[in-house]
Length: 122
Image (cartoon, rainbow, N blue to C red; front, side, top):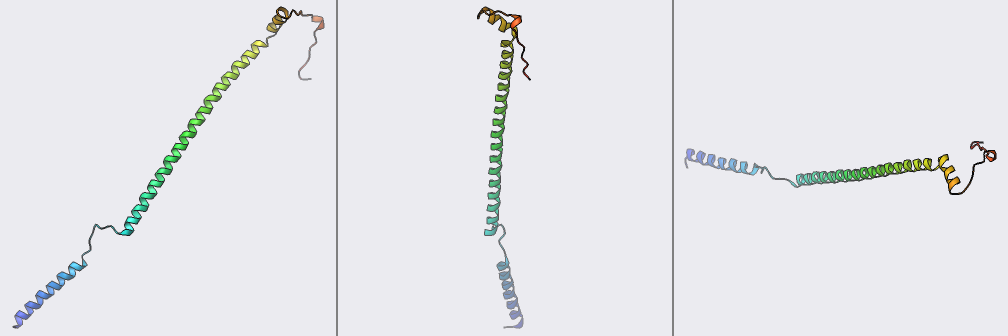
């Protein structure tokens, strides 16, 4: 072989070797590794756990507020009932009413000479 043909043949083999090296160095992009999958799964799991925890807290807060409002409503009803009963006690304990019942129904009479005044505090 002549010198020129030999050089041409060597250049062709070197190009093939360079091409082969380039192909072996090529790294596939877009592939997700196991570590990345694990990290993403942990991130998703943490997000779902946090979401469930938040929804659970909001539900318990809502239930607590509902029960507080119910207790406050019951308290208002009880206070109103107590006020009505206090008015009724005041009406029923009026001295004129007691005198009328004593005279009409029981036949009692008021004798001012026989009345004693008692102080509650002493």
